[in-house]
Image (cartoon, rainbow, N blue to C red; front, side, top):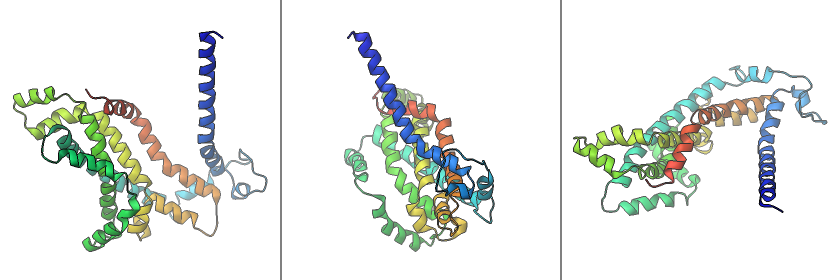
Length: 281
């Protein structure tokens, strides 16, 4: 067998494996999509079908009906919590990552190593101490409680990721900026941040995804339905006596849509950011 034939067979095997992986991964989402267009009777039929026999958009209309599912209220709450916590985590992460990357001070390596230890513990371990802090501050059942919680969850990873991006920026650029009279804060926001914009976007998207998809802390720190985020709101929809599968699938797909759109819009930045974060300049 020639080298070209082996190369061709290897390429065919790779694409077949990739196609199989995509089918296995995307098939559940395809079933969700098709179920969202089925009537309630057809969705629970003893003889299931892949494609709906009678297509309907009623489930999508229902989830935007406030008397059935206050989607827009939950969407607003999730958006406020996700955007605010992500912006705060990225802003604080910029300052912390810059200090660990560019400044030299006693204990820097110890602090840097401590971020690896964060991954050893599950988020459930923080529930009790965070609950005590939040109730003591009097912000239980508020969006602020969830924002603080999401910042504590994403900040260590934000600092760790941003430090990798800042490490790729040559020190000579900052030295030249200092000779031009810029101070540290000016260097951060005029030099470092623009050069690491791809890394900032990827970190922001990561923080947004964590906050948007959070169920554990939202279900514990929120008790009023008016303050529920989408994951908690979806759980109430799944707990209704009338199990309308099409409606639940439609709500789940629409809930996942903002993250998909955000990732699609920022894909170019995320790819370049991941590459830059893995190479020292």
